[in-house]
Amino acid sequence: MEKTFLMVKPDGVKRGLIGEIISRFEKKGYTLNRLELLTPSVEVAQSHYAEHKEKPFFGELVEFLTSGPVVAMEWEGENIVAVSRLMIGKTNPLDAQPGTIRGDLASTMSQNVIHGSDSVESAERELSLWFATEASHV
Ligand code: DGI
Image 1 (cartoon, helix red, strand yellow):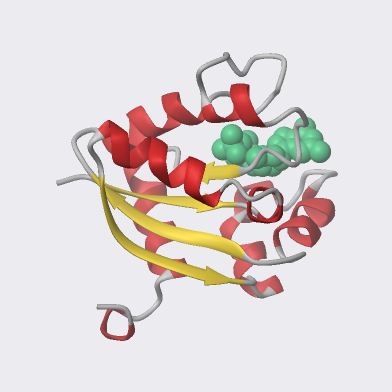
Image 2: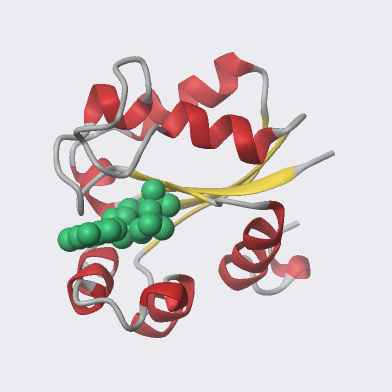
């Protein structure tokens, strides 16, 4: 079964949206396999967003992700990578449709409450980054 990495970002945790976000994926029928509340290190944040390291907003992005606790999660279900991206909605608030998590709950580009892997390959990379050793989490 396909797996993905979903994360409630620091703004989502601060705003009390953990339950709302988890609930949407539970109601969809997906299975929560792992969950950890943690404040990411700078190293993990930089590695997570490595594809953006040349972008002008990279510093701000890492600073934001390390600013407080996040909820790192492994979820499982049929076609979950593509479907969870649809449920999350677009990055730009102008494009995030009502009914999506960002469309309903986020209004800025950088503080957009949730991250979801954008491909099966990204999901594998991100799950091994955030849940480094299988034995310590199972
Ligand atoms: O997968 P997404 O989170 O939808 O989007 P992404 O992988 O392209 O970008 C990762 C995060 O970086 C995104 O959630 C918010 C931030 N970001 C992306 N593009 C911009 C940005 N932040 C700023 N300030 N400006 C941008 O153009």
